[in-house]
Length: 380
Image (cartoon, rainbow, N blue to C red):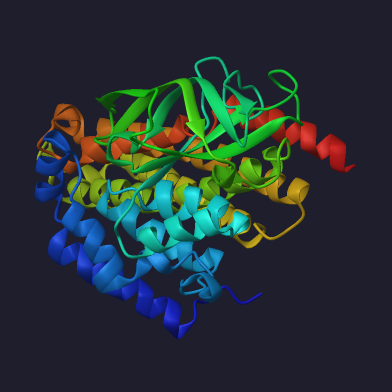
């Protein structure tokens, strides 16, 4: 099987590499992440107007560039290498998957705003007791005339402080854990009855906890079928998970490369620590973990168009592999750098924090091991 990239994909990678190298240096990123608002709207505009990558996930019929899963994988890997905090994953990939699947007038309006760099849309799906299960939600939406009233709580909505709108999962029937009865709604960030608590995350991004108190939305704000939103939500989460695995490969590549480089210059007992065989073995193990994560990411990416069970099996397998690599490579990178590996001034500590966050985002290792086993039995 040929795993080489097309000329267009190589050009996409080089264009993004050049942009990030010139305008997204580590020191600048560190200063932006430490101050308010925590991101660069000008960079978001440049993603839209100069690079056009915000249009990449959308089909030409919706004004996009008709990019595929491999294109997204390449973009996310480079964003991981640069530790980009702007919400490409949350808006263009995760929310974008749901918007383009719906394709209605309201969804198309938001797609246009995203492509032009005018809007950030985030998915509000996680709740304090959901434990990574998208069906285990207590937020409810009750029919009210031609519209709906949404009440409930959503937690850790990444990019929430920057969002113009949210895609909210809510129960329109059944109870927490039921596969049916989940619906998806577009909610404006300034909607009456919606309150938010914003806070920074350990990896330099921003998140929000959202409280919905009888927030009214119209019938046009419904995405997908009533009571049938869970399959769409699971598809979007799997798509985002595969993309985040690609981001992790970028993050882990820097951790591994910088650790090898440091071992060639840091001297102990009169020689570079990279000459010590025990440390050489550890760095080889780091490289092996990185390559296993890269392979698992590619397998998940190439199976995003498979049937839902096969898609979920491969994304869960990739998540487990990548999460274990994040822990192993991240911890060894810090240890081999010594105490300075955790200082804020050194980039290693920032990449380590992002790897630590990726390890648990979209589901822990235990959650995805259980999901993988359950789906394997189901597919047998």
